[in-house]
Image (cartoon, rainbow, N blue to C red; front, side):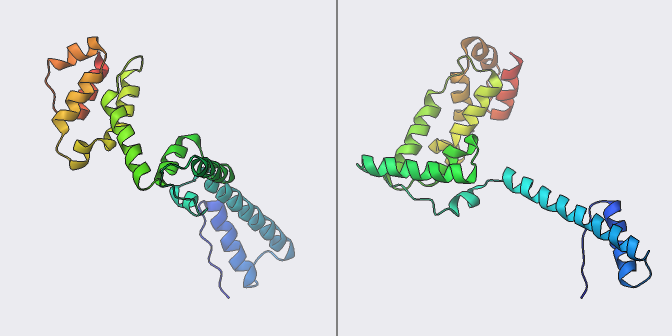
Length: 196
């Protein structure tokens, strides 16, 4: 039987070589074998520990949907809606879902008329978005998050309209400063807005 291990640093490669020598009878003897086994155990523990940390950090949509997440279709059903929310919250708790992912994961489960309602709400939020007390970075991030719900963005033909919408939501002093450039490229408009 041949065991192949892939190591990320030189110490681990040395352990592999030492193991090969010991298995062929040319190593350091019993003491060397014990040292080798102890080192291999440490490496395996480190690998298991790192794998656990990696799994805790990654909680993707795949992990969420593996929990047989219930779909929600809407309609007039207050008890059904409350049960759906409770079921989804239970799944969030079990998987240790991060707050920033909860809305995206829950909306993935919406279908039918409630999905249409959600999209319309987000489109309205996009059209009513104003910079207010946000810095330009925050406003731009929120704008870009919501613009995917705007039908013109989905068709890919509304760059000029996106710029007009972004400008419209800026604070008046910033809007006045950037409007003289008559920009029709959103990344450039956002960049110029940061200056003011």
